Length: 195
Image (tube, rainbow, N blue to C red):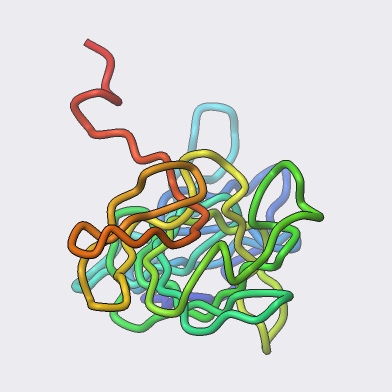
């Protein structure tokens, strides 16, 4: 008999006999489903059971700790930026999750000198990493404290796509006005892959 599961459903306890496989994630000692699909138990060579969920239809994924996510900044205040998680890794979500980037999670160095308004603006598209599940009000806690994480797409006041000119600034190609951002160091695919 097939067992269909939905995202966030607790499947079993994570112990010496059960390990989290594809389509699942670990949280607080339990294995949960990360998308809609059929529950499968795979017996491995070392007498453990891999708990897996084989997806069916549209992919529905729940972000887990350590995942790289693409977010859209909704609002910014001196302590944090609120965001919607739009993509998890390379999967576009049908419904966004709430997320938050706190002031202390923007950079890995000089954390006390971070100014949120000089890091993000509403509408910015940002690459971030999930650091924890947070609480019901804030959603997922995110960080941009790595060189590869930060603003990847920003619009100037006249609506033009801005170009990064340094780690902390982006420039409008039409007006040449510079604006502060926490810029991501994006490496093109042809340079990122080793020959």
